[in-house]
Image 1 (spheres, rainbow, N blue to C red):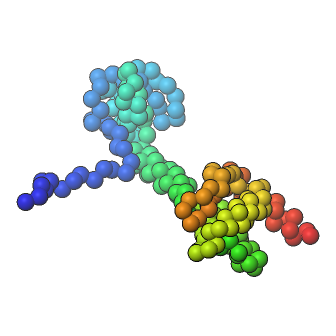
Image 2 (cartoon, rainbow, N blue to C red):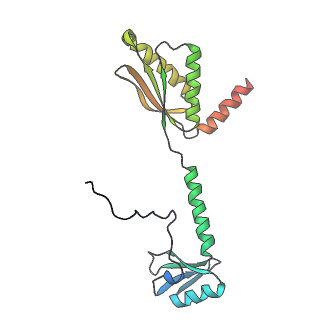
Image 3 (cartoon, helix red, strand yellow):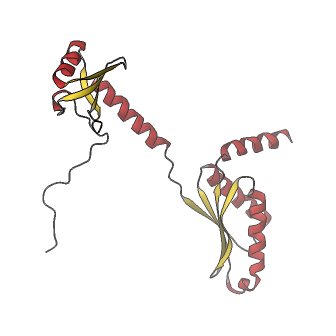
Length: 198
């Protein structure tokens, strides 16, 4: 019989909760008013009374300080703002993926341009791109065609990419890996304007 954990795993709260009001354990705290003014070190009882008179909460915002730093705020609103900031920062995080585009050593011009445009689309989405030339049967005797094709591609994409891995041979393929330049959005904008003007 396999080992099973007992009880349910506890879900971690999304936003770490600070100690509020009577949850605060320190005898003395460094107090900040609701307006951001430093009120100095006061006893916990006094800090709670000041917060109570203001109709707000006493929140421990820096528990590791000596004494802990507490602020008089509306905790509900503070927690909501903090949660919103975390959600927004998660939205901004982009998971970089590596997309692969495959060519043959004798890829025709139309097909080549179509695949190159696909590579540009992936780069625009801030993904890395693996450009692969795949050989079949006797084509393997002409690996130089694969290297030439990748060199041509890299020359045409050089304004927009950094080369992570130079073209190299592996089995029946030759590949290179590129990633978008940090300012690719600006570079593409400039490139599109120049194309429109031609």
